[in-house]
Length: 102
Image (cartoon, rainbow, N blue to C red; front, side, top):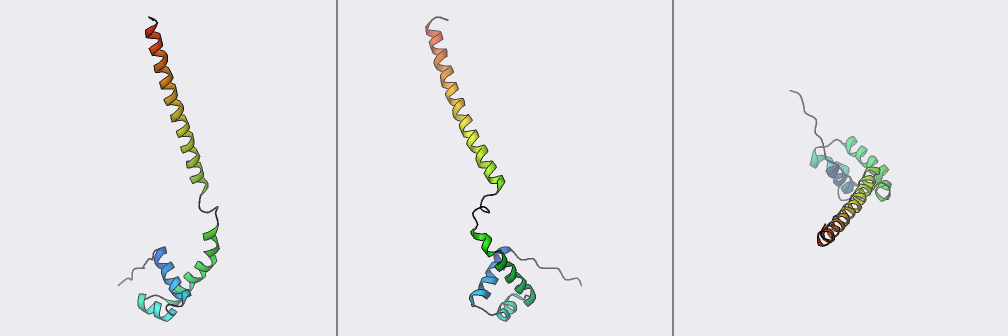
């Protein structure tokens, strides 16, 4: 019978590692409770600690794609306003033309 490989969410991994780092539970307790391998949990801890500084970097919060989307939304808003102004101007000019008998 083939064993299926379990997958764990990043939230679960973070929760497990934080319990380990904070001293809430020992490595053995965590592994027993969740039926995990100690080496795997140790790897999660190393990866967590290596990537911890990147959490506070501002440049990672907004990717280039998100910046591009924000810029396009600003341009779209500007163009929408310009279109509304042009429509109002057209309506005003059209009304003055009909009053002059044209």
